[in-house]
Length: 226
Image 1 (tube, rainbow, N blue to C red):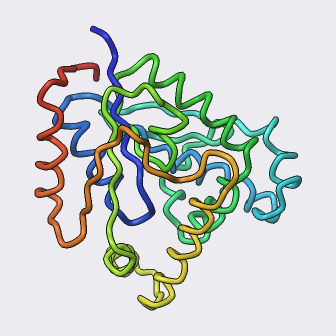
Image 2 (image 1 turned 30 degrees about the vertical axis):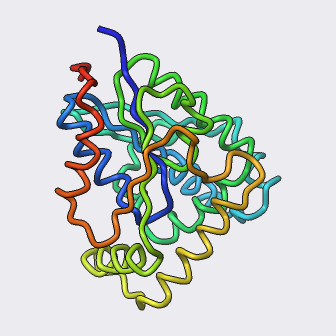
C-alpha cells in the first residue's frame, strides 16, 4: 500500500502532539514527533556543557551526534548516540534548549533528512513547525493548529504542574512568547501556515472536538501502515 503523510503544524501548546497521536491511532499508522528529535540534539548540547544559543558550538558536535527513531508497540522511541533518551526529552531545560538549537539551519537540515526518510518508508502523522512548508511540502493533508497565547500557556502550565515542575503561569506564558518569536522569526524554515493547510483554532475546544474536526477532513484517506 502507498504510504501517506499528514502534516500538523502550529505553535507550542496548540495541541499538535496530542491530536497527531490520536489521528495516527485512528488511521492505524505511525506518529512521528519531530520535536523529540530536536530535544535529543538539545540534550546532547547540554550534556556537553555547550551553549545552545552558540551556533558554532552546536554545529561542532553534529558530525558525532546520531539520532535514531524506532517504533516499539506502536510508540516512538528516540535514541541519542545509541541510548534511549525518550524519558529525558520533556524536561523544561531540554525543551528550552531545543527552541534555541532548532533555529540553526545545520541542525534542521540534519534532522529533516531523517524525517523525510521515515516518511518515505512509513505512513505517518507528523507534527512540528515547518512540516507542511518545508519538511513534507507534498503531504497528503496539511493542518495548522493554533490557540490564543493565554490558552496555550494554561495548557502547558497544567501539564508542568502534573509533572511536578514548579513554575508560575506568567513565567510559562513568557517562555511561550519567546518560543513563538524564535519559531516565527528564524530565517530558515520559520513557523508559518502552509497555503494549502487547513486552519483549526483549538481555543476552548476539547481534545475530542478537535480530533473530530480534523477527522472530518480525512474521509478520503485510507491507510494501514503500522
